[in-house]
Length: 549
Image (cartoon, rainbow, N blue to C red; front, top):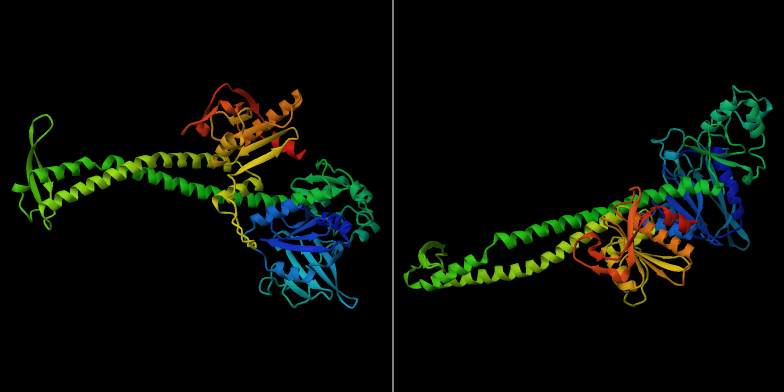
């Protein structure tokens, strides 16, 4: 997705409503920083190649970004010392380019003030974030640009800030003074894709709508639209453009800046979890092979038999021999001979004792292995089920719960109060529908927790038919109407289908029954058996639409 300078100008206009708010906190991660302003406003500034720009986000979204970040950019500390506590005094577009300069004012004592400027260059792979003082001297940058990397300018601390080269074209005012179709594509301050669309519309149309674009245009009068992969806002819907219904300039910038960050981070976190689960699955599979080898390849009775033969024939076995051929009668009374291996360094009686000890050791190990095999098989089933659920998760909150359970969540130092922390609950989600509460397990442990710990006998239990997935519990908090009951069943069946291996299958069937009809079993679908159930066809995206709308 690309954009032009005209959208950056609209972005700067949108930020004017935050003037005089104070910067309360600065946070950063990977290729972005957030500025928390008074009144709960959070500004996201990103210089990432695929998500450069500025947007307003929620505190919850900021926490999600912080939880997914792998590193803190060095410019974060410089911003904390320079603009934390400052008043936001303005945002302006520079040179009608994809550059926004944010200005902040700080009282330094005795009525004196200092101004700091934060310049965001939103230019894909050339994007940067630059902190300067009021004279334009660079204090710190997100990316240092050395002379060997760019022959036009250097972006380094203690050097004057030099903007990118000016676009080689004509100004809007000069073009409006003498409108011509030939010069239309050379106007500075607009993206090439937008100018191409205006060129097709004709010089008259372009003159009509460009006339006051950089004047006092009312933001609400702009039409959000997509021209292929180019996103913009313009006073009229252009030919070939797709109308972006109900999208404000703020929504557009969230789509440009926040959504790629969340999508990329979510994919990386999900991959990390799945890689850890895959490693654990391989470990369990190898463990099962080792246990089966111990149970079936080692015969402890052979060593007991050797020991008994030696004890009963001690009088004829010579010391210092490596083996002895001993005759014996089997249980059917037939005489047989066998060769018993011996350790010539010890006495025959000691060899017998060693065989008896080996018999006891192998027998005890096989007894433990037989008990362990069931446990390891259950763990393997749980891991495979969890992979099915995790591979379908797309929201950061659910991933955080699973990361916490697996011990792979990013660790951030928090001062303790001396009290021992309680163990986290198995990962599950809770939703409040107003008239009902819904629980959804996010792992095998989470499934068992919501089904056999949280759920009451008369709660409804949901699970997608035939494939591994989440257990969903529906508990009414008040007597539902027929409409509310239908709504709750649709919501729960959607959740069950979404967090399952069958997500994406058209017409996915979900079974539901009272919790009292669900019983635990080892292995099998959902690790439970259930009866007296009903079925419904689920829409996997319904639950997201329900909670967002």
